[in-house]
Image 1: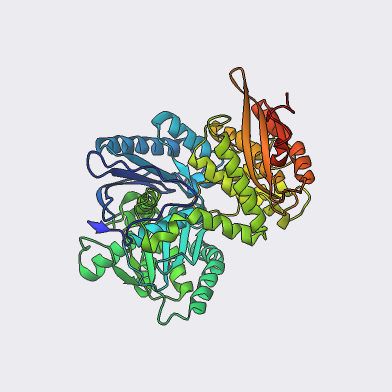
Image 2 (image 1 turned 60 degrees about the vertical axis):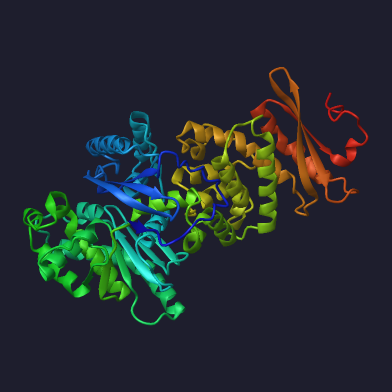
Length: 568
């Protein structure tokens, strides 16, 4: 058994974990990584008392999902069918282990393809498997979690590189909060398809490939070097490599140096000097000749050269002479993230349990959001959510967390311009690389912020159309009116209202009148501007829920025996 490097866990501040059922022994969980080159699944048995997990099965299918249509950039029908077949097999295998949960994510290929979301919807409809689409930064964060479940960094900065089929993730961290997370669009499949057209490739193709890689990597790696320099860390920067390309190169090196591949490659090191020799060798071979090299095989032999050049450039630009292989990466990171969500990991990974909250606050600070005001609006929004739950809506902790994030960020568009700032907020949130949220959740947050003022959601709006899941559209339709009301409650930004209470009058089968009772901070404050703003903002709320909203100060109630007297 390999234990997680952390013990006991803090619960997420932004999302309530689901209760962990321990009946019938230790839970078994499956994690699936839908990558650009390969699909991977790991099945693990959780020991919640240590906590740790034991890997009981690994599965892989090389489907080349990232082989896009050259004309449209879309996933090809053949690649989607190969992926669907592999996922069906994964699901059957997971069922045979009686898994409690399957955590599945899609990365670069699906993220970029115009038909990526359609593909995921098809998978959910045909296989009943929900696959989350995650951003490049979120992918890097979970890779980091996977690496930390297998290695100790001893509070010393380490660089991590994960070379996939469509992207390369670069990470810098000391075992605590990552200092740097970046996903760059250079991957072994992507670059093979774009640059290597001859067999073996020509010198001009190799030069163009190398120049492109260097151009994409120079800026992020220079940023990493500056962080390391500022830390005043002594000695060379340790570099950790994960996933298929680096694993194959480690195996190749082990066969050449040791005569055989060790039973476990975890922690195996090879040098930049040796890598440069392998690049020279691989570039002189045809694909068929590469495929005959032990450990490469048919599919890896086609793309290993581009992957090796990426790694060579990473090591050269970082100025490191050795790389250490880690067997754990994204899929194990999904397991760790699941355990965090269940409240099973604490201590060194404590910060990951609040990653959503910290990521939202970081984005708010970046775009100069007035944090006390945003927190006040968020407090009102969540209060309205809780008081109307079960009466006007039936959403749970996930949607509550998304509403909180939208409330905190709804005004970030002021960073660009006051005019149409709600539209600017959508853009900044959508492309702000929020961590801890999948792509669909980020889209919901951005849409909620978009509709905190002006027009309500409409089918013709491009941003609303991006919500391909009907459930998420309904979330925006029902929760954006709550955010509108919350904004109105602090119109002067003086915290004039200290609390709001909802009272419903039921007529027939459901509520038809809602009295919003406002508690002023100062008894003599008539809160005229807040009441005016509420009357302006309430229209969308009334249309959505088909009821009348009546704002009233609590100080006025003493003059009326019936709280609905004015409305009736």
